[in-house]
Amino acid sequence: MVWLGTYAMRKSKAVELRLYAPQKEKIFLDFLPLKESYEENWNPSWEEWHCYYKRLRIYQQDYNLLLGYFKKIYPTKDAFDGTPELVFDVCFDNWIGKDDWKIIIDEIQKDIDNHLESEKEFFLKFLEWLNEALEYTNIIVVEGNL
Image (cartoon, rainbow, N blue to C red):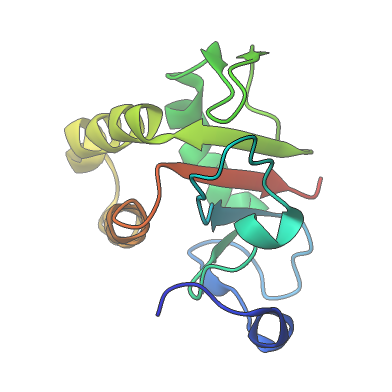
């Protein structure tokens, strides 16, 4: 089961992917796959993008490695409601659809050999998490707390 119920959600912790970020870092991005519904007029609740069993957290020093790849898909459209999104927002939520994730994945893969070995490992773990999550959803919400 990849989706947690309300009780399990409260007890679960995010998977942390770290490379340079200190243990006491407080600024992060959470990667939250959306539990999709095909009901008519469905409007996702907070719980529906916070219930993935293996949500991902990346702290500021490490997510800075990813920001250039996010910039490659902007401007884009919100994957849920289609509203224009001009920039990636590290302070709020970003609803990114599968097609945009595929662009990010392709760009990271093209560029992977230009990184240090430790960074390659970081990117490969990120790509592994992304590919697995995209098996269960078409939208991953990236939520920042800056």
